[in-house]
Image 1 (spheres, rainbow, N blue to C red):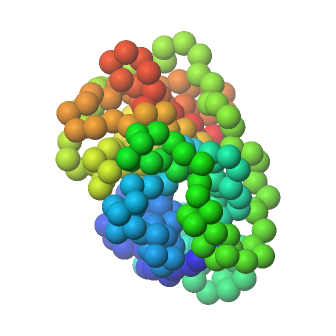
Image 2 (image 1 turned 90 degrees about the horizontal axis):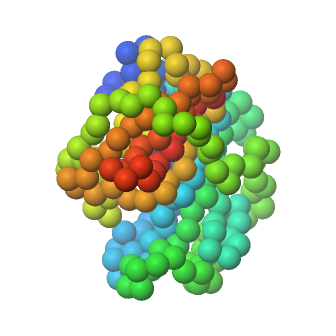
Length: 243
C-alpha cells in the first residue's frame, strides 16, 4: 500500500466548505501517480518506454467529504492484473485514523496499459506489474460492488451548453484530464442533485483534445443522475453517474 498525507486547502473546497468532488478525484489520481513515481515508474519512465496506464472506469463511494483544513491520508494499492486490465483500490481517511477503519471515501478503479509506440493497448509486461504487486503486500481488495461493465442511458437526455476544450482542461498526455470530465459533468447538474453520501460511477470511452467540443446531456432517474459527455457524432467521451 502506498499512502500520503495532506491538508484540505481552501482552493479545494466547494461553497459548503467541504472538499469538492473533482478535487477528491485529483487526490486519488495523484496518489496513484505518486506511487508510480516512488516505484521508478513515473512520468520519466513513461516517456522513455512509451508505456502508460490509462484509466477506464471509477467506482467511488463517498461516505463523507473532509472539510477545509482537515488532515487526511490517501492510500492506494493494486488489486489485480488480468489480460489487458488492471485494478487498484483507494481510501481516504482522516490522518489520525491509523487503521483506516472509518474511511471517508472508498474507491475501485479499472486501468489498461497503452503503448504509445504501437498506438494501442497491450498486455502488461511483468516488469510493469511486479513492483505494484510487491508494494501491495497482503492488502486485500475492498468489499465494494463491481464496477459496472456499462453505464446505461436511455434517450437523448436534456442537452446542456456545449463546452470547448481549452488548455486548462488538459494534462501531460495532451488529453482532457480524468478529473476534468467529472468536473464538467457535475457542473451541468442542478443544485442539490449531488450530495453525500453518494456513489460516483465514471466510464471513459475516448479522449477529448484541445479545441474539441463536448456536448453534455443529462439523464435523470429516480435514484440517479447521469451525464454523458459526447462528441459531435453522439459518441461518448465519458459517462458520469451520481447515485
